[in-house]
Length: 175
Image 1 (spheres, helix red, strand yellow):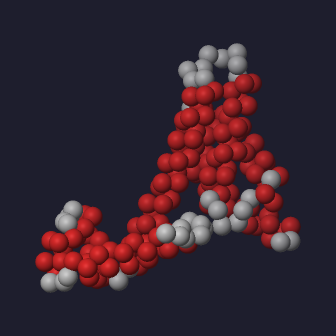
Image 2: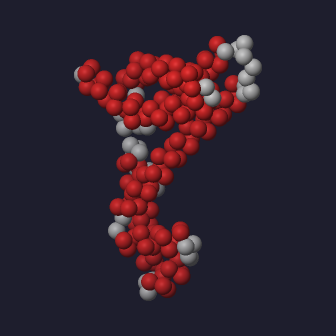
Image 3: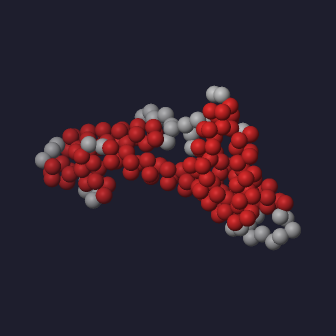
């Protein structure tokens, strides 16, 4: 990729994820100015290492992992100030925040993929997971065999897995 294209792609990814990255940094330092300074530092590091970023993976998660180290470094520089968390607690908190961000992405992708399913599959999924009906009850209500309901659920799960994996830029998992 040429350098101008790389710069445009980086800028686009950074702008699309700026609020998530800033929110992550702020949640760890609780100071707007410090979070802004860290955001600048993280942005510079991300640009320097952008050739190491795997296109198609989650840019925000990558940025937050870089941000975590920047926050730790910032905390060391602030050593003269009393801190309520030690580095281990901060790392644990940062890891949890990255995990939550990934779950939010997955939940959003799942909702979007659910909308793409044919109505017949949505109906079976809603009955099973929203209404918590067992397969026998679904089969009875829809005048289908239990096997047919299981096949519909299996098909739905496969389509959702493929769709979510595609949206998150991950290869579909093999059974």
